[in-house]
Length: 349
Ligand code: 2P0
Image 1 (spheres, rainbow, N blue to C red):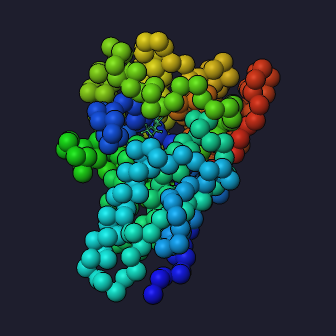
Image 2 (image 1 turned 90 degrees about the vertical axis):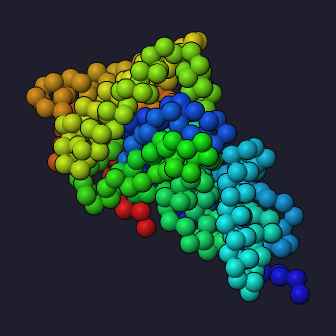
């Protein structure tokens, strides 16, 4: 008898913002990085991808709709995720012949972001994490988040870190097949619950140079890059993990700002140079640096990804001061459009 049922599962995945940045691949097909990275997962109240995965014997092709628009999923990233998840499901079906053969059915995926796509707000991270989790739930796979991170990484490198809440490291790994290039939890959000993140949406426009092509250009042409990947980041990863474990905000802030500036330096050192920050971004840097100087301690930390928008980390007790100074310092800067949302890192349920 033909199975008429439509099987379905829904999930959400959060955005993560790196405080030690991933930039550079040693293997472009498997998204294996040249250095480890570390991120904070933001609250899903403000930034998340919601994804529903369905499969049925009656579906004719695999499809993916993002924010209502049909996407091209013939690329190697989506293909790798689908192939890996289907093969894990096929192993379950081989072990238990009473299970429906979902691995042979076509998939329909429907995703929605509640934030601007591809504007340097880590949309691909939440997107691939949600896709992998939704299909893993649909297939009732037993794999834990670290095991699923191996698959999400092949969709988009930073996606592997969005399988966890709280403070997350992506260990670069050494193996040629990428089996040890995985995300691990450094600390749950509850370990440091007064950490907050404000997002300054400087521009919701799509970015000019994609991360994927930008980082390859940097690896190929920047003479600063090998020093960053081999010397600077390994040391910083250790210091950052210690700062998080000890809830040492001043060290966390210092390393976060230094690493953002180091990442944008290797972008500038790329030929031709890559500029992700604009004049409003630079004004935000000046405001935070001045706030920290006047305060006599580091109470806020800026970080910028592959776009002009800023994420500012601070502790809850300093919220009124930090947000007040940012607003006051930036509202007269031409081009400052929206002062975005504040999000606390939270548990992943
Ligand atoms: C990060 N970024 O660590 C860094 C900082 C942007 C700047 O991960 O080619 O979209 O899909 O592996 O993950 C953005 O790169 O790149 C990124 P792919 P991805 O968050």
